[in-house]
Amino acid sequence: MSIPEKQPTSASVDIGAYEAWLFDMDGVLTKTAAVHAAAWKLAFDDFLKRDAASTGTAFVPFDVEADYEKYVDGEPREDGVRNFLASRGIVLPEGSDDDSPDTRSVEGLGNRKNDLVLEVMKRDGVALFEGVVPLVSELRRRGVKVAVISASENTKAALQSAGILQLFDAIVDGHTVKDRHLRGKPAPDSFLEGSRMLVVEPGHAVVLEDALAGVAAGRAGNFGLVIGVDHHDASATHDYADQLRTHGADVVVTNLGHLLG
Ligand SMILES: [Mg+2]
Image (cartoon, rainbow, N blue to C red; front, side):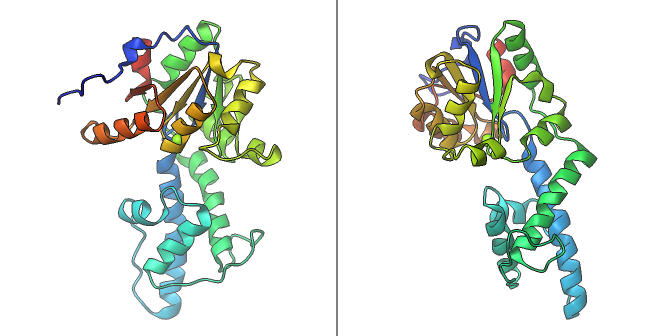
């Protein structure tokens, strides 16, 4: 496969040149999408079995690949519930966000899925992308500060499950975002909060992101370097790497280990 001209390479990154590195979690450090897909499947299949039994129809399970990608991936939880059930011709009452996980409502089923995320993390663990531990360990060895910046309220549980929670000097998670009224990406708020917690000027910090809104947030915050992380299959990377650059990435890597040169 040919590599486009002018593509910045990881070899051009001097990893000791910055005081702090701010890592997005899902898709950069952890393969959390697999956990969410498994939790959605458990929640929906349980619901669909009961629905089939009560209506006398056949149980057709949630497809962990096709249905996940089409209806729930990247969507807010309630939209995921509505979208998928609509594809089966099922409409539930909205309910309220304190509905118990057994309540037959959009919010209840969403809460069930959230409980299952934590159960699946405990049951299966959370997988890390290749190169994560070597890179973060090397940064720590050099005295560079490292933080995780994520909108997920399950950030600490996921890092704990993946066995890397203790490697980080600071965590900005969904609770921080809520408590401190931070705007979501592409606003730079959560990354700026991370650099503030580490007492490092944004210009002396690196942002690592796999989402287009995330690299845009790094650019908007005037960070010293924005690294786009493209963990898609090699065959699919070219378009996405280009989009990461267009949205603000200075460099795109397909494996964090490549940053070690
Ligand atoms: Mg991400």
